[in-house]
Image 1 (cartoon, rainbow, N blue to C red):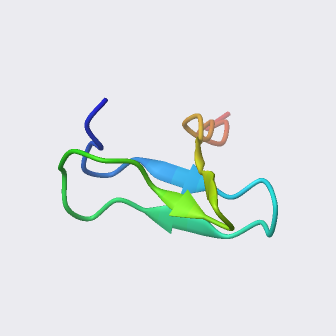
Image 2: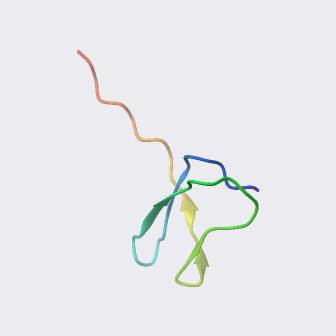
Length: 47
């Protein structure tokens, strides 16, 4: 799956987070493991 611009990834080993600034093919690696794609953060309530 190609990396998409603006997606965030997190290393489950060391906790490093990265933001994809250039789309392309390949995988995001850290600590010799593939980083996991983060889910969008919820927006705060505007009550």
